[in-house]
Image (cartoon, rainbow over all chains, first blue to last red):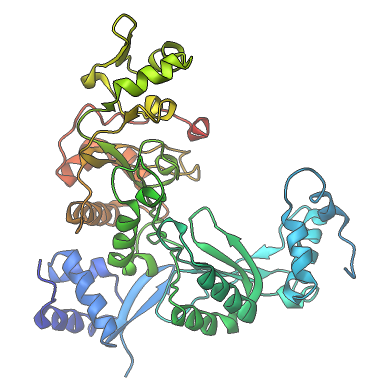
Length: 67
Length: 387
């Protein structure tokens, strides 16, 4: 598996998050039809880039960072 | 002490070390510790706990590592009204320098009660008692000093292993390197709870299993060897010549009757195919018998404490796996297991319970692992027998 997650995948994650208030990683993977491990990595990188944030409401959710 | 604690004082009596004595010592210089004594005394008097969960607390970006704790009688004990616990990820094998331990204690005296639990059953250094306001600055200081928080909640818990090859000649793989590597790889899984419930990984370098991984971990890695025991016949004869009763203490105790003592030729014979690698003969004759050369590990699955469906010992999933960097085989297996569990597990359902509900056959099919005779499900029913 490539170490670098493609910018195309990251953009797909962002586009999906624009349509929901919050989501779980597996929901994003399911919605995009992409391997969850790849989506996990993309989400992790987006978090480091400051584009998304985590919400902890009993379980982990992600959402687009408020700008 | 200004106030009497007659019920707690009882716990100081007896031959064992008492945590009450330590809290009293800390209470002389820390108000929260003093109030903690008061809360405990009241709990014994009322026969009910005075701690409650009061909401989610944590540090920025992390869902794990802080366990919120509030007192339900804050008006009586204002200095311990909030008494949160922080879990600090321990180094592999618990090797600290005194310098780093001093630093850890200094930080905790600055931001918390100063009281610690070294170590909690998860393995982390547990820092007991701080306020909500102090959580973030304490975390910032810890990270500046090179520490990170461990796991809590429905996340991967801090990975633990025995001291392995650092201090033990029986270790069949480098437990410290593996624990460190997995900890670095799975930071997200440790700090961001997103599974049905907790998941524990523990690694023991040999079947003596000094960290009791078989009883305590969902994913158990126990060092073993693929080839056969190495027996030094001269050393065996030395034992026997010095009065060691090899038949009673070793041969008769071999669980699979793989050993035989040839009195005539003064030779210990091994039926290699029958050896189940239990370590008993090695433990009894450390100078004469050693593990084989080709080290690796057995992967077991499903150990847990008795919360929902009782206590389980873990059972064999992969009889033998080489454990070498970059550990891709083990990481791929973990990810596959987590995805399946996350997809199928109910809230607060541990992996073993899910496997029991859906069936080992289905689990193996999803993992792509063929069934083998070593996968004995629940070899023993009660892990407490183990201890």
